[in-house]
Length: 276
Image (cartoon, rainbow, N blue to C red; front, top):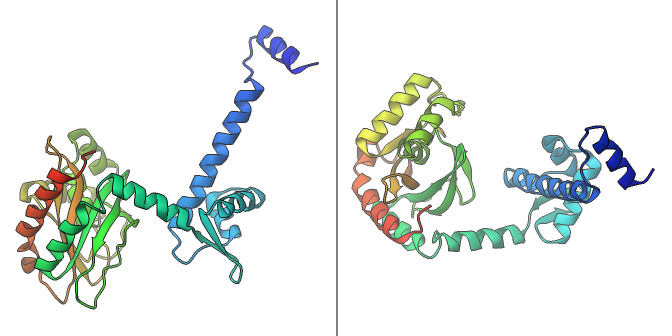
């Protein structure tokens, strides 16, 4: 029986048969999704990962993973390290990321503002946006001190354990804020992380009242930070701006004293950046 006859027979029996071309297009789309998934996984592996590790984490057959990695390597999205048999994100991903950053003004527009904040505070300045249930670092300026903040551009972090994350939640649109407060996984990253739902709800209410958020060793031991929202015309956060310091350098009180500097910079960012 021919393909057309198969289709007609199924239709006569009341069944639904997907056209061969549509099935082939769906298969291609699915492979694109799997390839993008591998890139996301590699983004979480600064030291790279083997094909076997990626296959296991992506829950894909090894043969599929190996074939996709070959295509991504050929096109420059992935680099292969023969000695360690490990894969890393390639320069093509960096190139595209820079274009996205420039499109949103994070490089050309935001960077000079972040540098001025760091000049005033002497500490690292971080700009983040919300990416689903995480925050994404889009720009950072390190302070002149030797102690370096590890949240580099491209880093995905938790919302409930960071000052930038709390600010993004507290000043999200009302319905989205309510969803995040009730549904975020409150996974502990340190012994100081908020893991109780009622405590998190109270924390977010406090951030809204104060107009800024703090993190005191909740995300990383030995570090604390303060953040303010970058608000759009409707009063909702489309980004957040933070100063991060090691605990031995500034107390919470002295850190909170930097809020006016951050708020002034946030207002300038709000006026200059494209708002999402």
